[in-house]
Image 1 (cartoon, rainbow, N blue to C red):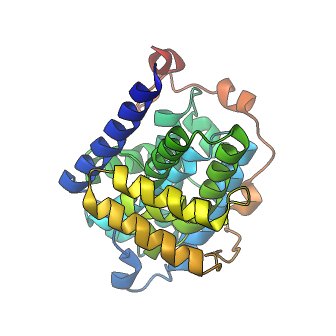
Image 2: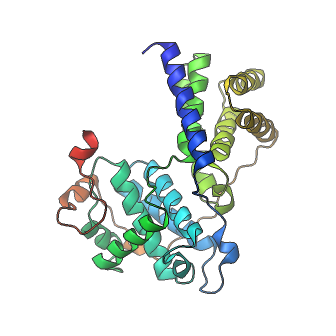
Length: 298
C-alpha cells in the first residue's frame, strides 16, 4: 500500500466513524444525575473501572477491552431500557452489568474465549451463570445489539496515524504520541462526564493532549502539525474542535486523574493468565454471543 493509499484509508475510516456517530441513536448521558436511592454514584463506576483494569491486566488482555466494556456499560445504563434502571438502584446489579459488559467486550475484541466459568472464578461466585446470561441478553437488547460501535480511542488512534503519515514522524515520536494518548484516554473514560462527550470530540481532545505533551517536538512544530491536520480533515466541526482542544490543552498542563477507589470485588482478583481463560470455552454455553478463535481469525 502506497503512502497516498494509507492516507486515503485513514481518512475513510475517520469519515466512516463520524458518519456512524452522527446517524447513531446510541448516546451516553450522565445517568447518575437521575439516579435516586441505592447509593449508586460516580465512585461506584470508578471502582468498577479500576477493578476491570486489574482483571484485564491479570488476564493479559488488550486495554481496548476495558474501553469497549465501558462504552457498552454506559450505553446500557443510559438507555433506560430493560433492567438498566434497576442496575442504577442496586449495587449488585450495577456490578453484574459492568462485569457482563467486560465479558461481551472480550468476546468481540480478543482472540481468546472467556467462558462464564472463568467469570464465576474471578468474582468468587458472587453471581451464577444464569445471572450472567440474563444480564448479557438484557444489555444486548437495550443497546440494540450494537456491540461493534467504535470507541473514542479508535478515533484518536486514527488521528494519530494521520499525523504520523503526513508528517513522516520517526517511530519513537509515534510511539510516544500513542502511549500518552492511551493514558489520557484511560483517565478520561474513568470520568462519566468526559465519557458522555461524543467519541470524536473525546478522541480529538486526547490526541491533542498527547501532541501538546510530546517532548520530541517543539511548540511551534506541534501547533503547525495540528493546524495542518485540521486543514486536511473534511469535517469542519471536527477540525474546529481539534484546534480548540489543542489550544486549550496546550495552555493548561493539568490532567484529569481519577481517585483510586477499590471495588468490593477486589478481593476476588487473583493472578490469572490467558492460559486460564483458554481452559474454559463457551461451547455449550447458553450465551447469546458465541465467538470462537477460529471465527475471529477467519
